Image (cartoon, rainbow, N blue to C red; front, side, top):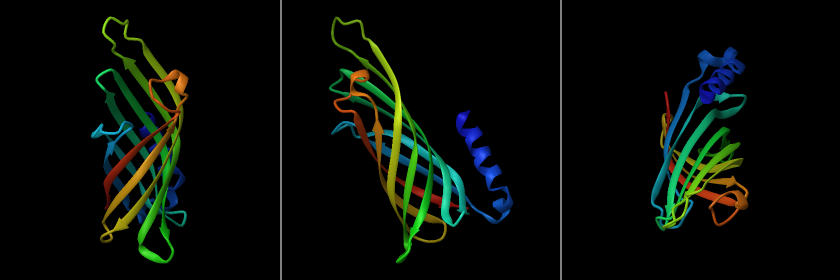
Length: 171
């Protein structure tokens, strides 16, 4: 619901250029925050291309669920706004920058314990490199950094990194 409202706001801010633009759509798969956690989540970006002298402006949503030694179960959900900008010397490469917030929900499952649940929210950022294969299709590789207070989570550190790879479709 929040994502829909933010998308409507984004489109209304750019409504004068809306019909001249194309849609930016990007699904992705994620790994992390633990070594060996494998594919642990997914994400999606949705926005507009060619807005305010940037290649695209978009909203991003990700959901990552990981287990550590079958004891800790962690879920990190992020909501961010981002922009994709061209690298001036090479027209086929771009970079993405995103900022927003992350929510954490974690449980610890020790034998004989009462399975306490911890919840928290914090800052979330993301960067990614993009290589365009043509005008409508690109590949991306990125890293998210979620800043969460270690005392209120079952994570080992206050920064929870996740890595992603995905496609960018423009139509």
